[in-house]
Each structure stands twice: as C-alpha cells, then as structure tokens.
Image (cartoon, rainbow, N blue to C red; front, side, top):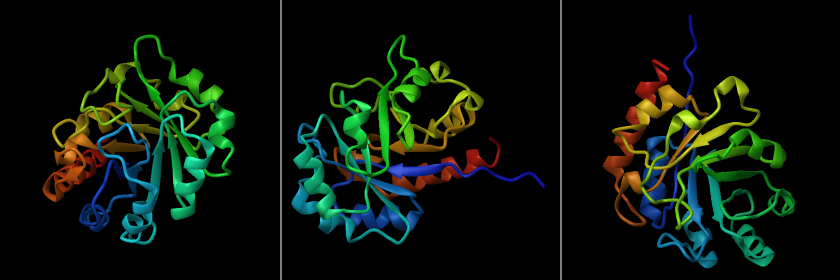
Length: 214
C-alpha cells in the first residue's frame, strides 16, 4: 500500500488569540508571528507570550525577523523560548545561527536566484522558505514561478513554499513542487492580520486533498 505524504501547514502573520486557537483546532503544524515592526502584522514582544499561550501541544511557534538587532531576537525568545526562527532580511548564516535555535532561511525567488546556492550558504538552516519578492518581506499575496525551484531529489534541505497561496491554488502547488510544507498569510485573511477560520479550513482541505494524489 502506497503511503500518503503529509504536507506540513503553517499559518503566518497571526495577531489575535482567536486565530491561534482556530489554527490549532484545524490541525496546523506551525503558527507564525511577525516580529518585524515594518509589517502591518507586527506583534510586539509583550504580546507574544499572550498569543503563544493559546498554542496547542506540538504546534510550533515561528518568529519572523528582518535584519533584527540581537537584542530584539533575544527579547522575543524570552517570551517564546521554544520558538523556531525565520529570517527574511540580509542576515548571514552566522547571525541566523547565533541564537542556538533552529531557523528557516527565507529566499525571495526573483529571476536568477538559485535555491541550491542558498542551501549551501545556509547549511545550518533547518529548512528553506521560498517566497515571492516583496518590499514587505512576505505577506504580499503574490506568487512566483514554481518551475524555478529545484526538483525534490536535488534539494538538501526541507522546502517550505510561500507566496500568494490560497485554497484555490495550494493544491496545484503541492502537486507541482512537492514541498515539505506550505506557508500562508494573506490567502486566509479578511484583512491584514485578521484571519478567517473558514478560509483557513478551506486551505487545509485543499492541502490534504492534494496529499492524496501527489
């Protein structure tokens, strides 16, 4: 009997306790919180503990940063010490790894970008997150050409796919890219930072349906 691959799902840019609760109830693997104050989905350090208290067991909190000062990351980890880190700026691998935490390295997949080169430069990363280029460092609702990604057998690190995903296209994305996981923010929102439980559910259903045939 052929086994079914389970694509991991992360809901990112969450700003409200009720959205954390809904994401966990629907079976999300990870919930992302934006610690970059240039984002409309920014969550201040003092609110991180409040939001992550609503996480169900075994759901991973992910903290997103863009060129942070070390103190900013350390304050966030003080509130959420078991978090996975995610870096979207120009941080070198040494800065990403300096906190002794597992981290994801985001890569803006513009023309000429080679994900395999990024894998070599960030060999200490737990995984690579392929996203569309965005002045806001994610959450733009724009996608990119998935055909520019290397085939699964060439990847050295787990690949998380982001960028313009929603319930209408995530099935095609899973079947085409075969990522380790998918990451969605604007595609499950009613407005920036405010998630829709119905849209999150539709997204989950679409991913699980694609898992059955991918």
